[in-house]
Length: 149
Image 1 (cartoon, rainbow, N blue to C red):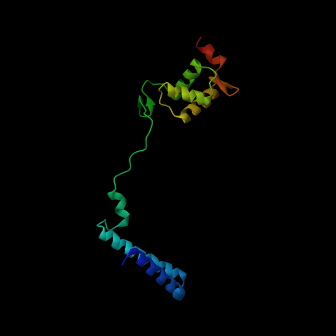
Image 2: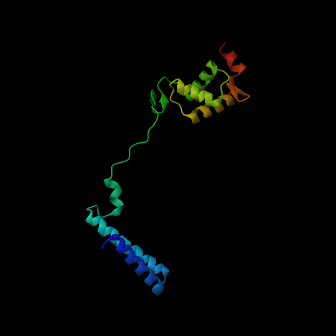
Image 3: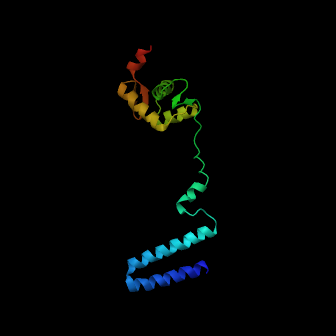
């Protein structure tokens, strides 16, 4: 029997059952019959009997593309610089950068760092008194500059 005829048959039976026994019972019966038809179709296609095991037969999806993270070992930079040190160095070399510009500068320099790491480092450096923000731009504090002069 073609699939379209089966669907028409199920619909008419569901309608008749719905009138006789109630809608809920008709839906249950239709679900049972559809599951039986699907099981038969799977058997005919020689697909594993359990529909839940189908995902086990498929190859795993490829991993999502990511940025290369050169010089990173266990989440740390090999040269030993923390995110805080990288951010402070960038502001020391290029004072007056905005936060997004600090992040872009580190990426352009080939430093594998996440945006969230940069924002956290900026916040902590400001809290420690290493840098300050004026008109949305970051600068080293006088106190910090005097320490290294």
